[in-house]
Length: 133
Image (tube, rainbow, N blue to C red; front, side, top):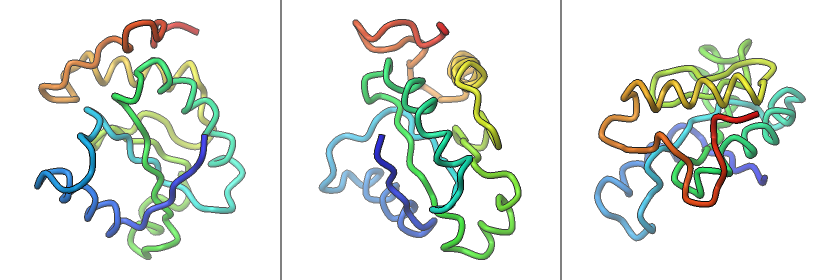
């Protein structure tokens, strides 16, 4: 899985474009925010389990990485905890990311109506069960 690093300002700009019906294609139903740094071994190690957890959702859930080094406030808030993976304001995983724990946390978040009106409690057709492993 390739990593796309955004500054917090760039991420906000993209979110606003989507909310205004900008030139981008229809956004996925849920975007996880992943805080990390370019040269972070734990961040690099988190990418594969994250990709495996998201794969069954067929693009309806995806991750956007934010480089905490780009903003002093973001660095101060998350610096010692990275990588940190959030759904909205809910922390799904931090530090050493376990695929099983992340899968369970995402399923619990979706089941708790944390995703609002978005119905993502199951992976896309033919994608396998997101809760297995």
